[in-house]
Amino acid sequence: FWTCRGHMSSRADAWLCAALLPAFDVASTSRGWPPRDVRVAVSRASDVVAWAASQTFPVVWIVKPREGSYLSRGMHVVTMSRRDVATPAALDAWVLDRVVDRDCRRPAARRGPECDRRKNVTFQRYVHRTALVRGRKFDVRVWVLVTSVDPLRLYVLRHGYPKIASRAYTGTRDLGDQCRHVRLMLDPACVHGAGEFLANFPDGYPKSTASPVFHDGFELVRGHAPPPLPGNTTATAPGARARWVDAEHFWQATVWPNVERALTAALLLARRDLLRAKAAHERADPAAAGLRRFALLAPDLAVDRRGRVYVEEINANGKIMGTHGRAGGYRDLFHDDGYVRAFLRIVGVDAHPEKKRYGGALAAALDHFCAAAGGSCAPGDRADLEAAVDEEAHA
Image (cartoon, rainbow, N blue to C red; front, side, top):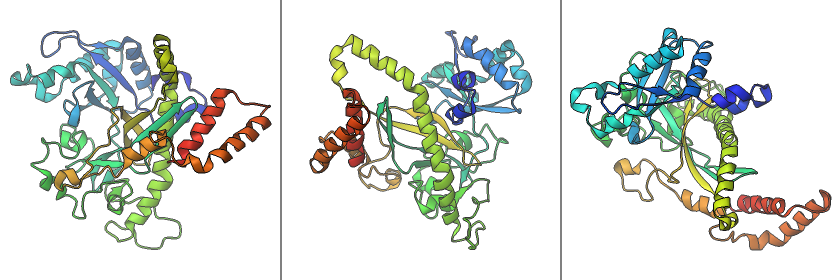
């Protein structure tokens, strides 16, 4: 975000920054608990103060531990007033008071490992004017296969997995209730079991953003569906049967293109660092130059009331959430219906078997293209073109 703010000033580049959220890291050098001193990343303290001058207050932030935050553990939401960020010193004082959530201020909790991890956190702007599903906040887990960063080639699973809060969203009136804001789905702190959680969804939990159940509950503002399709005269009041049709159209026409744009921007902004890491690896190990690299990423995205999409974080563990079986209960919320197999097929783990049908025609087409482009293609360029065709043919 700060790189964009400082260097992407032209309108042509503005889209690269639109999906990024302001954030800054905080670290404590204190050995005691609660931490007595906090060090804000120096290069960002002044950035935050300068940025805040143009903001409407209060500003809402989500505080995230940089490790050990599975199931949103240690996360909490805080508000910032204008005086809290009047100077870098005011920002330091505000951070020191907000870095620890209420649970870790209790004497009995101060020695626990969960609280100890919360001394090193990231403050990220919270999307509180959020779209809803059945009156509840949600975010979306999507899966992205990156097969090349230069040139950039990525493949996105055409639907995401909605992670929906167990309690109704009340805006910023009750930021202390983490079950409305940061603890989504089956967090043990919010529900007494899968049955209690799933009771909120009489038509079943929407396992995909492609599901009519998801679109039937999708709201830009609580109680209000997205705008109707042009020419659709069917009633669109809450609860009407055709409501999901308008919502699906809005999702596909507005939200999903913003998803693809956000993911593309994030990777373009990271590309320079990724290429530097690749070069360093190959200098240290020349044999690595021949490796085929790919990454399976799992970004979490927020959607606001206008259908804009923001990147909250990018998980790089290469996993598809859910199970391969249909065991029922909470294990039945999402299935890997061959998605990992399909991603691996794109990168060629089975040597792109369909190539035997088109390989000759592809070679001829590449010969013709390279000849028309100036007589020949560089070996790397030809390999990139061939890889792009192989991936598309097996996607």
